[in-house]
Structure formats: C-alpha cells, structure tokens
Image 1 (cartoon, rainbow, N blue to C red):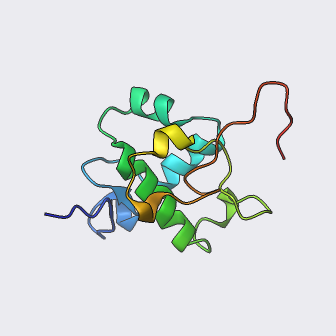
Image 2 (spheres, rainbow, N blue to C red; image 1 turned 90 degrees about the vertical axis):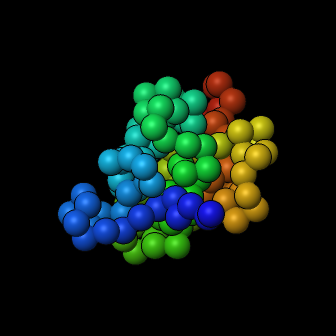
Length: 113
C-alpha cells in the first residue's frame, strides 16, 4: 500500500491540504519551519508526524508555489531550516529536493539571507 502523505478533503480542515494521519496542515508546517523549527523540533512537538510526511508536505508546497508563495525566499528556496543531508538520507528520491526539503541551517555566526 502506498500512502498519500498529503491529503486534500473538502470535509477535513476546510479543504486545506493536511498531513496524512494528522490534523496538521501544510500551511501550519510551513509557518513552523519559517519560525525556525527544524525536523527534530517538529517531530518532538508533533509525534504524530513522520519524517517522510513532513518532506512530502514541503514537496507539495513546492508543486503549489502560488498557494504558498509567502513561504518562499527570493532565491526559490523554502523559508526556514529544512532537513540536513543526514536527516534526508532515508527519504525517497522524489522528496530529496535541494532548497525545498534539504536546506541545512547555517553555521553559528554565519548570516543567512
């Protein structure tokens, strides 16, 4: 069985795309990421999420940029920290997207932007 990690159902969350098995929308994940939440913080605060599901939500946002335009930087990357290469190592290839899913945090003392 293949899981569709991002669901759209007009009867759930007012039709806002959400993560499979949760009541967390793609928009909520993007807001958390933009606020500085990385993968480990998301999983700690929301244990119902899965690593691949979060990556699928980020990929969904990339395929629907017009809907989520405020979450993209001028360079086309998603705002906020993404997965490090190590965190993304087990993801299926369709979710290993540079600047969308894989976007490590800058080193301490290094300005991002």
